[in-house]
Length: 118
Image (cartoon, rainbow, N blue to C red; front, side, top):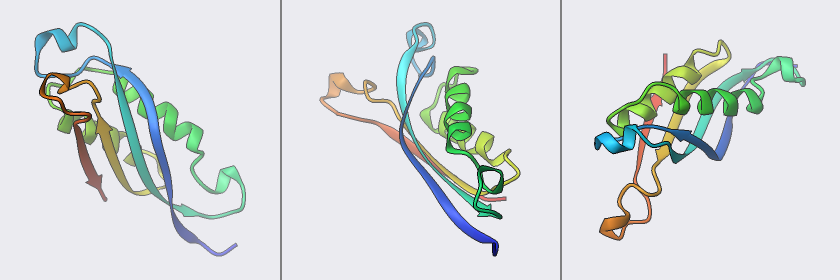
């Protein structure tokens, strides 16, 4: 099989974490929703020849559950950075949504997006 660069897109990864500018947000777990795109070099028609999306989902959930961030932007950067740690990753994009962030303002969703390349 010829080397092929492709993108793996995953939308709606639900994860729980303690992130936010208000101190209470770092005390109580809350839901975040993450969308990612990971560009990989596909070397074979097998899971060993790419990056298994189940591994991506697990890494995203671990990152969101990890250390707290004040800014949503910092959390999005952490997700994208952690995905770049995979040797197969050529480029990553992470969009982190915080659905309940601005309910009091009548807003449905707040998100931050980060794109990383080596």
